[in-house]
Length: 67
Image 1 (cartoon, rainbow, N blue to C red):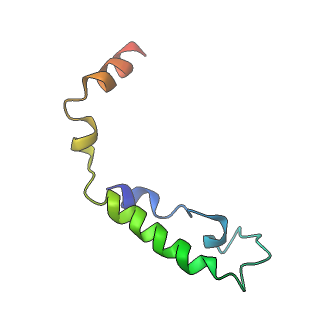
Image 2: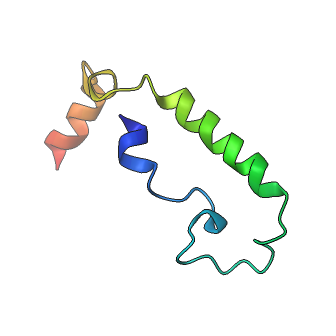
């Protein structure tokens, strides 16, 4: 779930080809490591779903009912 909503948002500026202003982008060797880290980040969240976030979360319910 998380990946489907958030993976379009670049995790670092150099991953956005439209707004990237990094002068090092063409020669940067860190980008490969950042790509791997981003994949691992999303992989760790792949099993998270809405039910696991809100189901039985009485504290969250209290926050919303107080608004």
